[in-house]
Picture (tube, chains in turn brown, yellow):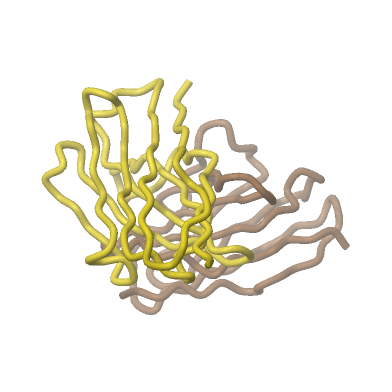
Length: 108
Length: 120
């Protein structure tokens, strides 16, 4: 199975900051990488698919990049509603669909 | 509006059984693969099982293989997960999710989740 490792596991930032979260795959996954946002007590929500495609309705301050083994999710200017946990997920070699362990983004 | 609504969660003793349901609306259910993903309390996301649109292809995580059975009824726009021989480590919120397959696969949308607690 392909292992997905996110860094950092947690992050403190302020409103207006630029934030980058990294996801690394244990082997090359081309661009088969998705990002989700989860707020406490809620279901995950798709943000980015195929590494860099923005899901409809998601604000343009979110962006994704990368290919092969290294990927990033960037939030250009943090808004109060962006404080949540973020997960990456690979779909290159499935099943299983594997997720990163999550990155918790907290208010500084 | 595309919507998924899970039901059937609850408290069950170790070794017991439970059947989860997921009611779909707002899209052509029979055209999509569907999945179950779970999240143990305070933990990350774990894919559990998937079923193709016509039920021809079914997959399970190793952690549930032989104990859980996924199924669907396209006439009723419904997805199911029969869970047998439940263990404490199966305690989690269980989400159903539609799978979109284009340049890879992704889950969108997700249901609100149903909590399964396995405890004596």
